[in-house]
Length: 163
Image (tube, helix red, strand yellow):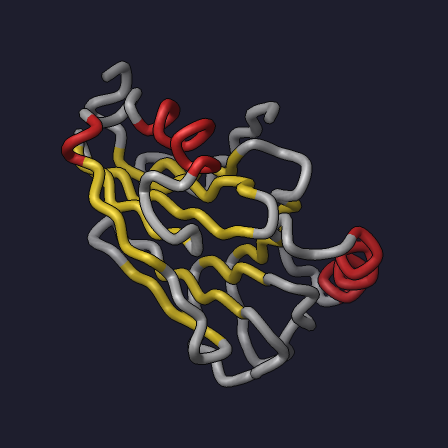
């Protein structure tokens, strides 16, 4: 455990899946569209990284299921995340907005940062970037990076790790 005092979140590039880890001083709550913590994508890339923050037995897992077209996640580290999985525009304002599956950038949600995960096509990302730039809104493309990191001690710190 190299970073046992770290508090923040990591959003991992797990290609078409979505994986988010809330990390609080040696404890991790992992949310993913993967079916279990034993999924090969998680055991290969995500769990070894999370073991720098917590012991494996202290990593909790919750499955993200998108029965509704959008979802909202919040945790004790003070970050609210809205996940847009389709073009349903009934979302709350949030700190982070994650766009998935070529969802359109909503006009009615003002997030501090919009993140495009690996489920988006490059064509869709390029078109959405033009719109976000025109609105002077911040964005991050997760598709070719290992993870987006938000450190609670620093304001919207981005760290990029090669995959």
